[in-house]
Amino acid sequence: MRANNIQLIVGFFLIVAIASFIGSAVADLDTTANILTAGSTPFEVLRGEGASDIAAKLHKDNIITSKFSFVTYAAITGAFRNLKPGLYALPVGNIPGIVRALTKGPQDVAVTLYPGMSVSEMDKKLYESGVIRRHELEKFAIEEKLEGFLMPDTYHFHQQSDVSVVVEKMRENFNAETRELFANMSEKEITRIVTIASLIEKEVSRVDDRRIVSGIIYKRLYNEYPLQIDASVAYGACEGVYTACETFSADSFKKDTPYNTYTRTGLPPHPIANPSVDAIKAALNPTQTDYYFYLTDRATGTTHFSATFEEHSKKRAQYLAD
Image 1 (cartoon, one colour):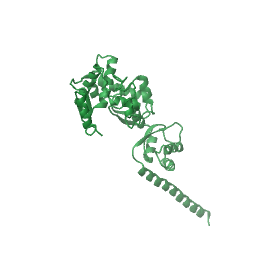
Image 2: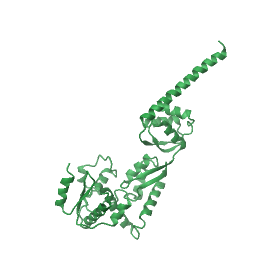
Image 3: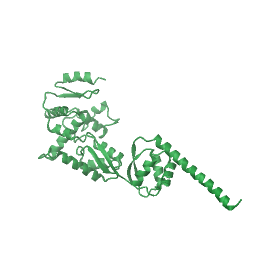
Image 4: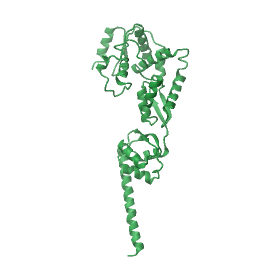
């Protein structure tokens, strides 16, 4: 057999092997993309990490199911040596999308921070969007006493932002929205209003109801009667995280903490959430009524008010019975 024929045969089998290799990777890639497509997850690429290192981390974090498919796809698309370091929010299981994101580098992302979110909850949302590292905002907020003063809104941040830049944008928004509302007020007065607004934000949603609840809060404060606001107790028991808190229970109302508005009179030591402008306006403009009690119907979300404890007890039995 001639040498050139042998080379042709060897070349043919080599092509078949390569095609089989790529085909297997692509098939695996398609399967992975179809199985895991729900949501995104935060991920950090460190400077100096290569495709194999990144693939191992992605696999460990359950963002991809096949390291082989990731490395192969990065190789055949020419992205192998162009994966950029930074913080990302990556599409789970979508290897083409992951490789595109890592090739482009960190991008601007829209993040919606809702009224009533605590600093801890905002921290988690920003981390999941690839904007900051976990707990960066929490640490910054403790030092600067920012709970309550970060305006809820939809923001556009660059992934891998400096936390001080993130805070500056949110504080500027807060100041712009409240400058006229807080004109000629002292820092102590502003903190008191924002604390009351945070309680209102967590208790009721309708504007008219908020002003009535605001009036009840002021009346209780004046008469040195416990505020008895569940959200404040939850803030203390759950360290500022309201959702999926396993430490909040009936026993939380018996444990005396600075946030337990059942065992103590007065306001909690600082805001328990970041309120909306509507809640701040309600704190500034309370509606005076004969009411002293209120509760929210779990089924409809309607707030029911009472002037006496006896009337309140009847409504509790009616609307809050298990």
